[in-house]
Image (cartoon, rainbow, N blue to C red; front, top):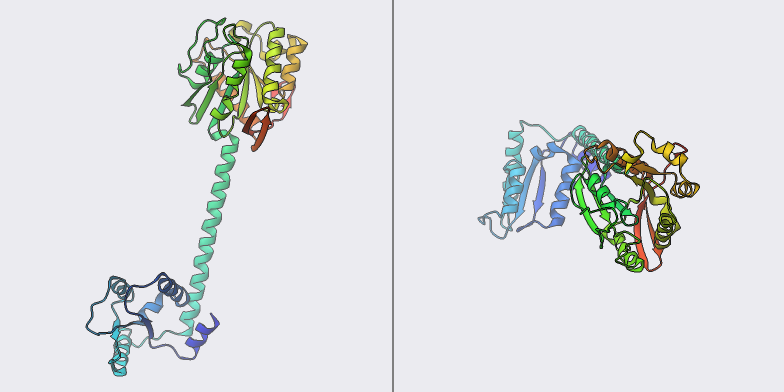
Amino acid sequence: MRETLRCVSLCDPGVHAFLLVLPEGRLTDEDKGELEKIQMIFGTKFRKHTIVLITQSSQNKPLDQDSESLVKTYGQTYHSISSNTEAEEVIQSVRNLLKENRGSLFTAVMYAAAQIEAHLKYKRKNKDVKQEISELKLSSSNQIQGTEDLRIVLLGKTGVGKSATGNTILQKEFFKELIYDESVTSICQKESAEVQKRLVTVIDTPGLFDTSISNEEIIKEIAKCITMAAPGPHVFLLVLTVGRFTPEDEEVVKMIQDLFGEESRTYTMVLFTRGDDVRRMSIEYYIKCSSRRLQNIINQCGNRYHMFNNRNPADQTQVTDLLEKIDSMVACLCTVSTVVGAVVYDCVVGYTCVTSAGVN
């Protein structure tokens, strides 16, 4: 930069013409890079004071596409030179250019203005990059707040209404429902739908304590839900029914924790079905009046719970409230690689602040 300023200063009071000398043939990427650098150093007014000199073996040889494009960029002013070219021909081109410019010279002031222009250009570019980074951060923040895709795994024993819960969440009859005392789902089933302007994926799992299939086989199948929820589930919904919390229900919780590990409690929320059975009783009051064993399970799951009435799937407020609670739980995202027995999975997990009244 100092040398280019010096070359302009040596021509005080100004440069009559710049001779931009280019070789014959197509321009290389290096040639193009040098031209961009020259343009950046001397600014836009450089073009008015430039003559393109193209070295050719024959002066009558037509210009190639790159050379034609370059000549047009610099206002049609060019001169083809060869070993037979006389200096007077080039000087005459300079005189013609000076006449077109009405005697105007490229001065040191113009050079300084070009530097200021380049500085402002990169300052604007830097501002645009910062703005783009800010927008990306905002987008990432919005995703953390729950605008991203959501992956839900339903767990529980046979007949608690997992399939009905999946249909209520997705607002479509994806999962087959039969009577409560029979298991409808024998393999993991994955379905997705747009719910409240976001993609929600639900994985329904076989029910434990199914009389037709051993628990060992069911557990092997449930383990597949992790890969189906790749890159990892956001939440496990432990589905229980409103009513008496039985030793069998407690055993289901133990089997799930043995399969996914004690850390899975951090990503688990208890969801009660048959909410219509409690009528006007609040979920908080129901839990307060329930057995100590059920309260202990809810406490192990971070005091996260919700209630569904699958007989009234049109009531979408219960779905909205559920998604908000899940988003609250996933407020601090991270990816955790967990090994549970022979199962390796990546979970997108989060933590939540809780109070005795429920999830905040």
